[in-house]
Image (tube, rainbow, N blue to C red; front, side):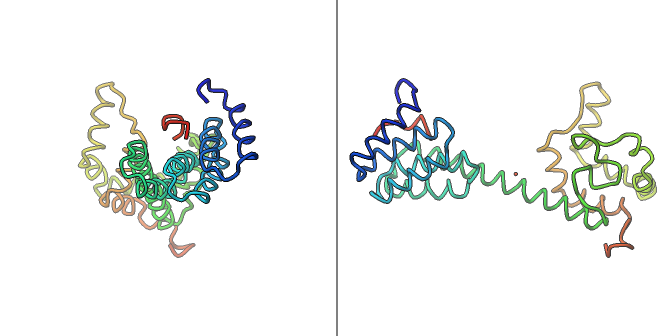
Length: 236
């Protein structure tokens, strides 16, 4: 493990387990080695095996938490770290891991909620959010980019633009501080394309959601009824 020869370490720990299958240390250390070669599912299995032998073996919880986090199972990682801190409350590595897992879980939940909100707006407009932009026909080009020729001739977008101009949509847009700042940056040559976090903030803004519904003007409703490993003392 010290020389970072992880495949050989896995082989050596496996031999140790054959000799003494009752040691949680060997399973826990092999779990750490598996994580170093990105075999996180095997790391979880070994951490569980170590805890079956000794439910108070703190490092096994730490290694399980790391492996679960690496697999994107943030809620399970949080649970593993919390259980580990129950048996080893002063473990700074698990405290840090728990904090990171909680933040990632919250971020993941927020992204999921934003995606659900976008889908709901699309359904209200009588469209499918789909792979394109808002599900409008002709807007799902290669890589999710719009087909510009279809975009310019899209009657739904023409209708939306007309609704925006007649219903005060432009004024509403510019009243949003984030959009106003983007427009100012674009006007000064400093760019202005929003990043994903800004888009998510806009989509979560109730006033922006209401404005989107107004701009769509009920289009389409007639037809349908409307994403520890090495730092935790590898040994023992």
